Length: 147
Image (tube, rainbow, N blue to C red; front, side):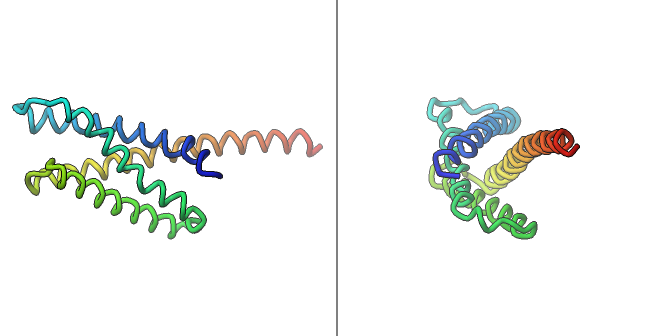
């Protein structure tokens, strides 16, 4: 798969899933913990920036896609991707000034973990549905031409 196809089929849908889930997470955390703070206009751009940062590991996924053939390698890769995401997001949040305490850092880290798991689950279910439809089509083809 060339990079253009990978961008259209993998990175762009993942970006929009990440941004949407970041918005839900920010809304939930904001309503629970930061009700008293006013929202400024720059806050509206935070999910877009963090969505872009969240897609950075997908570039590593594209570069190292041939090394994920075994199950342990896939689990190890996903763990490394989560660690890389946590480092990218937490360091960006620290340098921007979003992290003002350890509690805020823990909330952001847990939110990144939840978003990572949700995006991975949605992508797995989409891929599983696609594979099931291909398997059904192959079974029908086999029944049709097996006789």
